[in-house]
Image 1: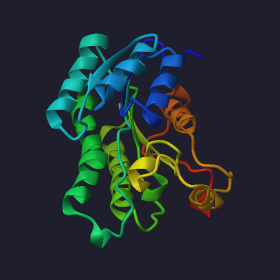
Image 2: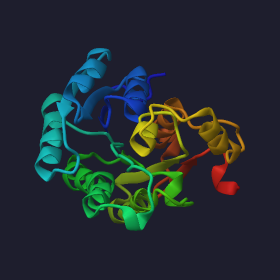
Image 3: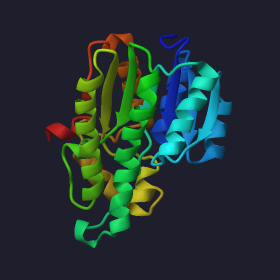
Length: 248
């Protein structure tokens, strides 16, 4: 398909995980992609494997670097049609009252402030009909203990999405996706293990009616749909990519 030919798509957190899959999906459908990540070498590797792309290093919590990312996209492609504010991190699982203040603040700097900064600097340069999409989490709707600050930050992304959508409609559509647990770098950051043990994985999957965790491609598919003309009447949508976890 070529739904995104002649479109410029910015993707943050694109050196791996959801972001890489999102970048590859849009590129496969004809988009020029700005591959943005704190890991510049990783972003360059992804960008180098796409038909038309550039790599930009960014700390998504930094205002100046967000402005520079937008300018880099404009310098290369003259516009931004889709902005994918995907970058985010979890914290090591622990009770809320045992968490360091700095770690709590980091959740909101990276997971929420980043979406605000993306909107602030990108939306004024986005043409009518464009989309801003962010990655929240099903945990923002159905939190579980141990990751409370992370859950709260993703709940904030959901509310930010819905409020911002009303402010910039009808010119720009604002939506987010809410994935369930996925075997990406999330596991390492949350548990310290590269992958869940068989027992932990089974416990997670037991709560998902579809019988598996989300894949990066599941999330990329949702991004492509929300950015497409087929979703042209959708704004303020927080789309559950959860295999049914939220109905349990």
